[in-house]
Length: 303
Image (cartoon, rainbow, N blue to C red; front, side, top):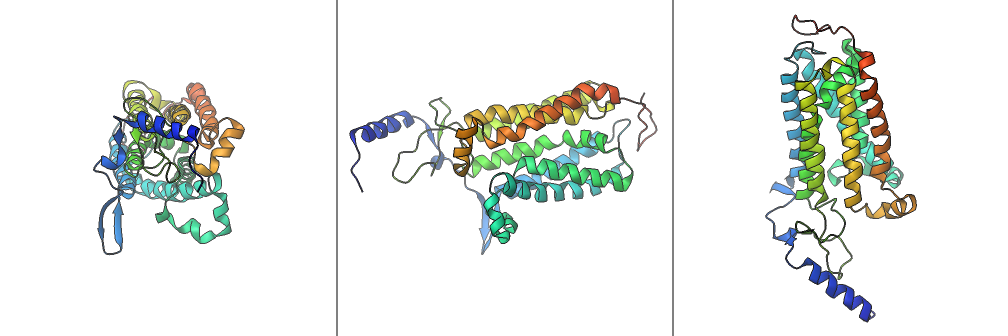
């Protein structure tokens, strides 16, 4: 091993100095596993998926109590099955296709969900296809069903990003802001760890809390739910913009760093472009799709 040059020594000292006073991730009482019994480990990431689905299902039932709901209570259980299947299959296949196409050379790796690797954009596509199939089988308006489901998705996004933080993954770029965190194993062994943006928490706040607040206001304080496509359009637009902005503070995946440098944007940002455009289209054209809404459950019609 070659001894460090004066410039390298200076960089090391500057990095160590810049991390002084910042929180170290290793000092936080966090670990990826909730508990381990024998060979079985329950991970926070798994609980995040379960919590997002269960709370989203509960909130969906609450939305369905309102006049002119696009489906009845009896449909909700079937919808959760279709949506969950779409999340898992779409999320995994989307990750392999967008972020790790080399896994197709070893198909068994694609099935190893416990090794991690899920794409939100792939999950959106899978869930959307599942909803369309569900709506077709039950004779429902697929776009209005999308509107109601979109209002529930921020729960899963919030818990998922918190799980990313607990796992110490998907960290941000080096930063010297007071709330920067020194994560573990972000640079080659022997190189001082820099303090970084906790981009997982940025996403939890924007994609989870803020996006939920926007959709809550649109559903409960406006007539958006009577304009097919408006709520799901707000979701696509809001998520796309939030993710696009946060990616500027987030470190790209190591195997996609060259792609980001060559194109000027991260893969996640490129995947958000069609979401932003599609969401904007749905929002701007929603009023033209408004019609007399006959409820699936209840007795009240809405003009």
